Image (spheres, rainbow, N blue to C red):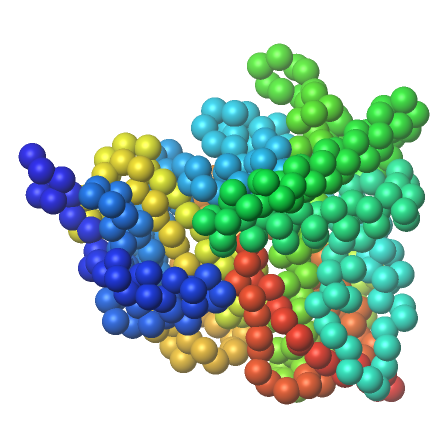
Length: 450
């Protein structure tokens, strides 16, 4: 049977149009995705060569099918895992199959809610320290500040007392440098030869190795000291594989820690920046957040109990991540031929799901571009959660989701308790890189006296 008869795909975007739009897509794919979805429906495809296809979708059924219902047949694309693993190693974010499952089962207990509760006091102290010198009554570029806060929260949660400022700054520099180069490699594949012969690949691989050595030194110091410290490093050192009873090798531990640094700080910084901007341009919502903070702090001094009562702040965060999901897109490739809804697809088909577009799909959301935290309260919340993917879905859902929510709630509570926020302008600019990165978002903090 010929390929054309055996397989069928969503409406095809013509290859000529694809190439005509390529430069614009490279700079910012989101407006082009929206244009194609509006024209072709909730899924469309591109044919590469005679028989290879790419599908892009904002259809909830497609998302649920590849991420949950038949996720065993869908691996992360080689494109994603190859580029990321080159610099980040073989950690939870970059591997698939049996090895991924083994690592997930090993690490999951360290992120259990009871374990996270043990980190909250230290997390809160770090946040208070980081936010004590907010500049008031002047424009503040929000993302760099939130990035600094989020990075230091992850660092202090991983290595409570084990890292000097100089090493911490070096890790931060390396992570940012490697990520920026990685984006260039992904977005400009035709320049791979130049990146190689100009020494840029070698330079960034050396930076990644320097990062490995810094983390290796921290681990070796901790093991030699035999100190039991209440941080993530200690929790990870205590984990044991079910089949052998052994702990992780130092090399594997380094890879997992790098993933936690990257996944744990940038996405959180993005979400906090978007959320605070939205609060700064919706004073009524900001007032409700302030009232909830006063209420929960009056009812309990225990930080974990306060976090559990922050219903409205959670709704605000969810609505912000619906509009601006930090992990804005994901992709998978099917291991075997499959039927996805009405489409019969060949193995090796690349399927991208745009969470940004799914979260704004009018099929699932009323007034999808409107900021409305009520979507995530009461009965409405059950409906909304069916179409909501801030941390992915299924077995590969972000392992640190609980950690991130705690951190973001504490940051918002600390800021709104002390300051009123006013956004400078209502246009929200962003750059859809590996994550959805805010650009030039400015706010003014003014001290509260109420």
